[in-house]
Length: 176
Image 1 (cartoon, rainbow, N blue to C red):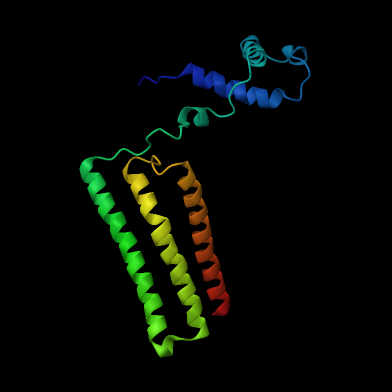
Image 2 (image 1 turned 90 degrees about the vertical axis):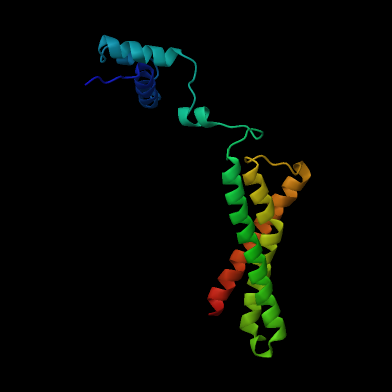
């Protein structure tokens, strides 16, 4: 059995481990007598080289805003688009039915059901103002195409509508 070892990863791991432990030491002379020569060379290299990045995971996986993150085939886009559209349409229809039923049925016009209507309206606003744009953005590869101004409006609507829905759920749980 042959095991391949990437020595640069091992050296960088040792280097980062030693740098964490050596922060308290004022000079490398203090440790030169206590380390064997190969380890001393790693310590000296670690202290003389420019600061290393804090995390190699972050530096390797950084992406820019304009890069495409999600790459789907045509069939996958069709299936995902159909599912996301169905979820959005069902959300809109279901919440509209809740609002209409409470408005037109006299037995349902109770104060506790007004909270249900409030939740339905908050969820309806999410379905209308947020879900379609997220679906389109996901289908085209994760790139926002609606402009910078609408991006800020979209983020505000997303946060506001989702927060309204969550707060309404909290009030309903207190009421029950």
